[in-house]
Structure formats: structure tokens, C-alpha cells
Length: 462
Image (tube, rainbow, N blue to C red; front, side, top):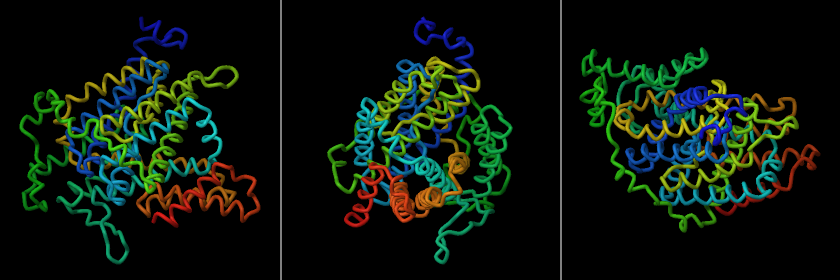
């Protein structure tokens, strides 16, 4: 049956190899089970429901990818998109999370329509590569800023906007548990282990930092810490080292407050057009780049260079964005960590189905998710940010009209604390520089249209 479904022999793989590849990918991307609820809960959505939604949304989307497209790709709520959802749409713009979910739904529907028509190809061809790379890097810098803020490494400063915190501070602040030194330690551990290609580097880094934090609360005197009311939860739960302390049968009623709660009608607002466009753009280009990279590593190209099953994988990804909305998730998208499973030999959808089933099993680990201190997980956020920023190496650094708009996009995303604003500044800068340099022929109709849209947004909607 597995041979018939996934064509294992045709892809020169075995059931054992596919299962191990699935386990490898799951371990490398499982941090999203803990990180997404932490970020999204800042909107007022319940942590427990978000944890279950993350696990189930990732499971359904990944199994869909495996069964429909037969690709070894894992999917989950998108990093960066969840931060944009939380801090820009809900936080800065002041929309309810229900309306923000409505915007996610509309962007997902547009993505599906584009995936079944030629619009997808037109969009991918219209946007210059420099701006595509900048979107990934900019989201990375945006995430990095959030990670540094969450861990308490950077704090508000009335003179310089931000400043370095007291790295010896251990307490609890506005954004959850703060321990700058331990948060930075988490990032360093993950980075070193990843460089050395240690299996499960992200999870090991989070686990070691968590253990150190708990050990400090056991060994050091209480007055060593800046204790607030919230600090009472920062203690090992009963049965910390016991099997029953880490597992629990999930109560799916926790999903009820966020299940099918997208306000689609409320998202039909002119001011939300840039938000919908941002969700769409980041999702499309992140997905396309990830899938093409995985296809190359997995040798899914024929002798003519055509990628086998790319159309189906894009459709599965776009449909997953809509499915995720039903669970209360930001756009569900393909994860570049899938390359780890491909490197382990994964070649078919059986790898993806394995990943999906492991995500489904993750619902039993809610007590573990509740136990992890925020700064330990935020170290992973800083690490992911560094990985995403590496896309800037693909820029043409000899052409000012290419790299300047890209750098503008990247920087403005973080410094305006808005992915949408960063994209808008990037498109406007690109068009003006190309025209000013006498290279207007390089500006596509799509870029012209979007530049006008973003200018109108700044003039009429700001």
C-alpha cells in the first residue's frame, strides 16, 4: 500500500528511510509547537488553545502535502507571519485577532486562486529577486528584534529608543519571564549545536537552558531573583521528572474560543488591503523559495529541469493557509527545516505523513509547553532570525539599485516594527531608484502597480 501511495522504489527510498527522515524534520521544526503559542498569546488568545491549534494545523497541512503532492515537506504556522499578526495587525494597528484571522483567510483564498491559475507565475516573475530575498531577511530581522525584546536583552530607553539591559537581571516583565543572560545562552547553545549538526539542536538548547533556569531557582536564594506575582508560575511543576508530569490527555474544548472565529466580513476594509497583501507576499515567496530549495536537494527535477509535482505542492501549501485559519493560526506554510529530512534520505510524501503524525501526537505535551520559560524558547527565535537574514548574501552588492531597496526593506521592517511598512518602503525605493538611474525598463507592471498601491496607502490611510 505504501509503495502504491508514495512510489517509494521510483524515488529510490525505503519505508525505514522515510520514517527516519520524517522524525529528523519533526525534531528540527518542533520548536514551533512552543514558540507559536507564546507569540500568538500576546493577542489575548488562550495559550492552551493555540498550542493545540498549532499541533493540529501543522499535522493536517503536512499530511495533506504528503498524500496529495507526495513531497517530503513539513508545514506549520509561519514564523514572522505570526509576529506580524500579533505585533503589527493586532498590536500596532489595533484590530481584533478575529479580524486579523479574517485577513489571513482572505490572503489564503487569494493564494489558492493564484495557485490554480497563471497568476502565481505572473506574481513570481513580476517581483524582482532582490525584493524577494529582502522579504525573508526583513522578517528575520523583525523576529530577531522581538526575540531580543522578549528575553529582556534589549529594553526601552527614553534617549536612544532601545538599550542593552542589565544582563544579570532575573525577573519578570511586561513580555513574560525575562532573563537576558539565559536567553542569550539559549541562542548560543542552539547556534553551536546546529553548526556541529547535532540532531535536535534547537530542542536541546531549549531543554538545557530550561534545566539551568530551574536549577538556579532550586540552588540560589529567593532574594537573588526579582520576584513578581507572575514569578510564582516559574517553578518546576509537581512531577517535573515524572512521566505523568510531561504528558496529559488534551482537552479539545480549549480550542473552542478560537475555532472558526475568523471575522471575514470585518476584514473587508480598505485599510486592511496592505495587511492582506503582506500576508500573501510573504507566504508566496517564502513557500516558493522553500519548495524549490527542497526539490533541488531531493532531486525532484526531471532531465529538463522541471520540478516534479511543484504545482501540487503549491496548491497543498495554499490550501493549508486556509485550513490553519479555521484553527486560529496565522498562515500555515512550508518549512525550510524540511531540508534536514531530505538530507536524511526523505524523498516522498511518507516523510511528510510521518511529520504530520508526530505533530498530532504533540497535543499530549501541553504540560511541557506550559513549563518552558519564555526566554529559553526565545533563544530559538533569535536563532531562526539569524538563519533568515542569511538570504541577503544572494543580493547583487555591485548594483545600488538592487541592494539599496533590499536593505531598506529589511531595515524598515524591524525599525518601524511592521513587515507591511518594510515591504512598502522597499517597493517605493526600488521603483524610484530604477527610474532615477535610467533603468525604468526593469520595473515590471506588477511592481508599478504595487508601488502606486503602497504610495496611496501612505497618503490616504496613514
